[in-house]
Length: 397
Image (cartoon, rainbow, N blue to C red):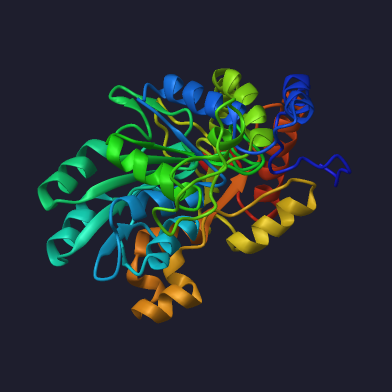
């Protein structure tokens, strides 16, 4: 395959006329910030996942921060999570003065390892919360994690930034722990551009997060300005944050939510083609597969023994063929802040380090044409051949 000018982006949002009309309706309404559209989005999202209520926020990072704050996480506490995640998952604990305990991922996957988690909990007192991450849309072993949390007196906050709409036998990811946090960033299955949603089983936790989301006010702007009996008077009952989602973005989210099932099936169809194309090839190792996988990411692993080049050069060669790529994730314990604070060496979490060193994320997004998917497949196979790996037939000859 010669280099093509037809670039295949790593990710694109799927925005249609319905989202455009919804935004225009908000613009014409005269109310742009958190109000009627956001309240409706919260109710519709909660109904979708079978939760009693949902709280819309301006990012999943905000949601994680609110979740830990509502749990009372602070100085002297520990929060356990995986180093194989985006920095927000761990940083929110530090924002509250708590310390982070990292726990490796499973030997074959990207998800938090319950066996390693048990060792961490056994060795450390003062763990207030566990944050398992459903990386790429692959669900963690929540039953085991929840049982460990119960035995050790910890709360569980599910990081579902990649995992909507993952539905397990027990329920949707995000409804299984004490709290669940979703992301609607531009690359996610449903998007508001920026934004997120938080769920909590406990009503008191929900009330606390609702207060802290908007400066610690005792009532929201929608209540203060939109009724005939509206009053300018309000009280500040806590030193809160500015984490609310405006109606302009919620309007997009409401339309995206209606399409979530179709978006998921499109992603699964693309993943199925990749699994078929790369399965059995000596240069590639497939990501773990689960019936409920959301396929936010397709994390293809390279086999170093079958290639003359490392992951980074393979990435550059494939990218040069017009394929948008990424790497998920650089383990946090290898980054300057975390490694210095906790004295961690790269080899401290060997499974996370191995996944990082061999993984590339291929384009996978609803709206990808069959031709674009085939461009990715052909370019990856061609790059592997150029880098010295024989194809399946040659390898078996």
